[in-house]
Image (cartoon, rainbow, N blue to C red; front, side):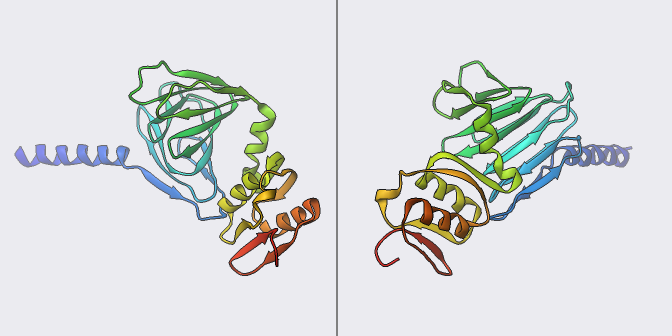
Length: 236
């Protein structure tokens, strides 16, 4: 009987481990991955990102260790879908949204339905975001910056189609975005042009094409070598 009881306990422990053991997924620099989940949801994982997925009997938990992902959540009222990014939490039942982990918080963009977001350990009530809204959720402060910006959200999620969509962002911000997606880095040699606004849709994996467009638009020099692409500056 003792052996039988021990076998049952071991089986239960193994079953528990099966449910609780997270699956890990990561993307390389420049890689965007579409990942169907076993519950019918889909995760699209952006460049240089890593997540852990735990699909349990009563919860669906995604831990965002690094980077950004967009989720199309299969409806299941009995199993909340929660993304954890540091201390930030985002909960949905059936909806679509993205989470980008930052150093001290996370960007949350909702493309469909409704999500609730809060900071673990804070006394503030969860804040509700609906389709077309976005917010930066700080680990230190209450959610106080909710923006209704459906067009902006579409542009910010252009990475799902392999693009970077600029509508007045500064050269410095554009360079930072391209450098997330590419090992050969863009470098601004002349700080005077850093704040110049840029417009257009570019392939995320073509920093050289972007640099040539900047060369024409801003009338600056561009120098390309194996390790970097220099924009502006003497001798470039």
